[in-house]
Length: 263
Image (tube, rainbow, N blue to C red; front, top):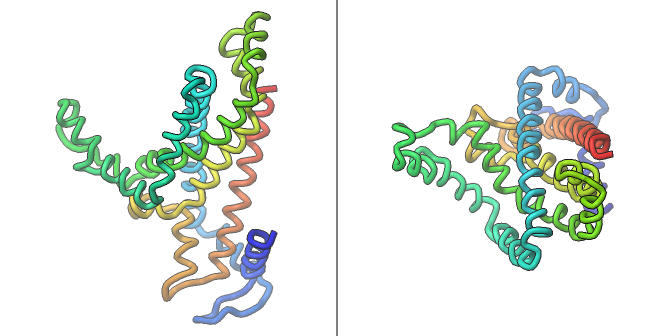
């Protein structure tokens, strides 16, 4: 409560103040929220942020689930070893991993060089860097280890006997996953989706380094409001809470849909 509620409450109060020159004026105004909602620029960035976050989560969660399933039921004896290898990527710094993806996705990077060497392309694929695609790919690579942790932890509580009993009662593979495995692993899936979606939607470093000026997210604008000569802390706080409200609504909606699908 001390390290979360107090800073959030302070930021929420600040969102109703006004900035005049280099001074913050204690006041109660909804002008910051009005500007955050009405401005076409901010609306465009919010939509792009939500799409990038959702697409990233839609890529990360199924891959994390498949990897966790393999660790739990296919390579059970080596599951812990595979988990350690997955977590090994977290030992490197955040910026180091982003720059590593730049060396892969760049025009002269590993991927383009390999495709050209194989003769599949004649010129480098420009959309692999400084684009929304580059942001999604990089965020997916960064967040995958975090998504694996809760799903694998949830699958550890699923007994193999439950799976075999469902098969004995005639459950097919898809039916087994939808009605047995997913409901039992749903706490981990929800947590993994929250990690992927919320962290991707709140990121501003990755869009800066691999997205370019055409792929900035709302986090970049919020960060700019808290630094530099033209900073506007109250507007930045209002943009932050509008973003939080939107992503939480979408997250809760997705959780409800998953609950209905796996009921």
